[in-house]
Length: 111
Length: 111
Image 1 (cartoon, rainbow over the protein chains, first blue to last red):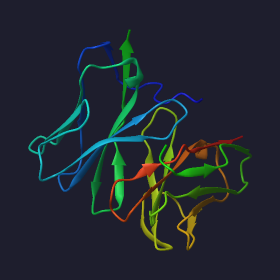
Image 2 (image 1 turned 90 degrees about the horizontal axis):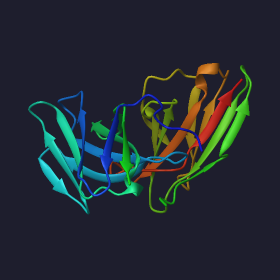
Image 3 (image 1 turned 60 degrees about the horizontal axis):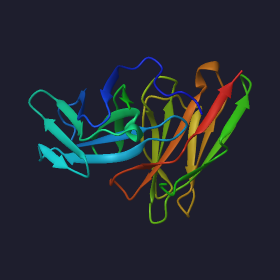
Image 4 (image 1 turned 90 degrees about the vertical axis):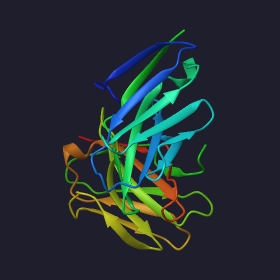
């Protein structure tokens, strides 16, 4: 399949460690935030979301933190596995229809 | 799998030609959004369709147009293709403003 994110920031972690991927968003009026995972040759896959009236949300092995003061979003992955290797995108939505994606971070998990 | 399908998987066209890409949304989803993803970048919002009407548009010229059908499937049409139109075209479906689920994309190459 095609390569996604040839020149993206890269985070390299050891299998079993926790990963933290950070994202700065642009619009203080954004009210909904999403993290997507994209593997080579595939479309983005929904991981977790959070609304602007929350500052933390947990899923299975993942946690999203939202700091509206500094317009910062982070994705924490616990006990990172080789299958977590992919490009991760944060996305923000304002007004209900237009979703704006960040540039992406490549996560590389070392076995 | 998200239940969102796209066709064709790959397509090669020459400059000046026209192309039509197709998307079938997930069952129960009435909203379809289209994105363009250039190599090494995040997806860029093209437009969204809701109940067969364009519901919002990103910063793309009028030669990018679309349709949504009564069964909520959708087409993206691009006229007068340019080299810079080479990208992965992604379709995402949702129930109104709920979470969007992406298809695998169509890889368009313009020569």
